[in-house]
Amino acid sequence: MTGGVLGAMRAVFVRELLVFWRRSTEVMTALVFFLIVTTLFPLAIGPERRELMLVAPGVLWVAALLATTLSLNHLFASDYQDGSLEQMLMSPYPLSAMVLAKIAAHWVLTGLPLALLSPLLAVQMALPTKAIGTLVGSLLLGTPTLTLIGAVPAALTLGVRGGGVLVSLLVLPLYTPVLIFGAEAVAASAGQGFASVAHLSLLGAFLALALSFAPWASSAALRVSLD
Amino acid sequence: MKLIHKYAAPKRFYELAGTLTPGLAIITVVLFVSGLYLGLYWAPPDYQQGNAYRIMFVHVPNAWMSMMAYVAMAGFAAAGYIWNVRLADILAKVTAPLGASFTLTALVTGSLWGKPMWGTYWVWDARLTSELILLFLYVGYMALQASIDDPRRAAHASAILAIVGVVNIPIIHYSVYWWHTLHQPASLTLTNQPKIYITMLIPLIIMSLGFMFFYLTMLCVRARSEILWRERHADWVRKLVGLET
Image (cartoon, rainbow over all chains, first blue to last red):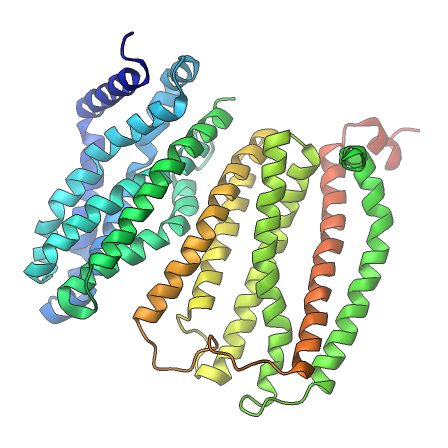
C-alpha cells in the first residue's frame, strides 16, 4: 500500500463512506429522528409563533445533539462485530489516524446532512431568517465536535451490555459546553443577546481541542475494548 | 517509591489500611464534633442570612470534596491505567460512590440553603448546575464500571472515561458560568459572597478537614472490602475468613 498514513486514512475514509452508503437506512435513521423530534415540540408547546421562536434555538440544538448521540452506536459496532477493527489494530499505521478517518466519514454522513437539513426545520420552528445562517454554521462547527467526543464512549462500550443507553449516559454530560455555545450563538443572532461571533469562535476552539484529543483517546479506548 | 511498591500489593494494603482506619476515624470524629460545635454555637449569626447560613459548614466542604474526589479518582484511575497497578484501580473504583455522595449532599444542602435565600429549592445557579453535571459524570463512571464484568477491562475503560472527564470538567464549569452570566438572573446569588469573617472561616476549615478525613477513612474501609472480594479465591483471604487453616 502506497501513501503512508495519509493513504491509509484515505482508504479507511472511502471504505467507511461506501459501507455506510450501502446501509443507508442507518444513516437516515438519525436524520429522520432529528426531523421527528423537532416536529414533536410544536405539538407539545403549541403552534404560537412567538413561543416557538423563543425555544427554537434550544430545541433545534438539543434535537441535533440527540440525533448525533443516537448515531454514535453505528460508529464502531459493525466493524467490531465482523472483526475489521482488529485488522485495523494490527495494521502498521497508527490507530488514532484511522479512527480520525472513521470519525470524519461518520460526520460526513450524519452531521453534515443534519446541518444541511436544519434550515428546513428552522422555518418550521419559526426561527427568524437572519438566524438560519448562524444555525447552519454552528451545527457545522458543533456536530464534528459532538462526533469526536462521542467516539470515546462509543469505543468504550463496545460489546458491553446495554451499550446503547450507556453511551448516552456517558456522553451527554460531556456535550454540555457545545450545547450551551451552539444554542447561544443561534439565540444571539435571532436577536436575543449579543453578537454570535464569540460563540462561534468558542465552538471552533472546542473543535480544535477535540480534534487533537479525541482520536487519541478513542483509539486508547478501542485498545481496551479489543484487548 | 520503594514504600509505594511495598504497599501496592493488595494484601499489604489491606493490612496497612486496617491499622490506619481506627486512627483516621477518631480524627474524623474529633474534627466533626469540634467543627459542628464551633459552627453551630461559637460562630455568630450572619447579619443578612441569620442562622440559615450555618448549612454552609456542611455544604461548602461537600462541594469542595466532590471536585477533589473526582480529581483523586481520575488520578488513581490514570495511575492504574498507565502502570497497571491493581491497587490504584481499586482506589479509583471505591472513590466514585464516595464522590457521588459528596456531590449529592452538596446539591441537597445547596437547594435547602436556596429555599430561604432565593425563595425556591432550585435555581439554575452556575455552581448548582455544574455540580449537577458533575453528579451525572460520576453516575456515568459508575454505570460503565458496573456494566463490564472483567475487572481489568472495567478499570481501564473507566480510567479513560475519568481522564476525559477531568479534561472536560474545567470546560464544563466555565461554560456553565458563562451561560449563567449571559442569562442574568434577577435573584440574589451566592456567587458574590462578602469577605468571610474569621469566626466563620475557622469552623469551615475544620469541617473541610473533617470531611477530608472522612473520605480517607471511608476510602480505607471500602478499599479493604473491595480487596477481600477481588482476592476471595486467594489463600490469605480464605485463611482470614476461616475457610482454610
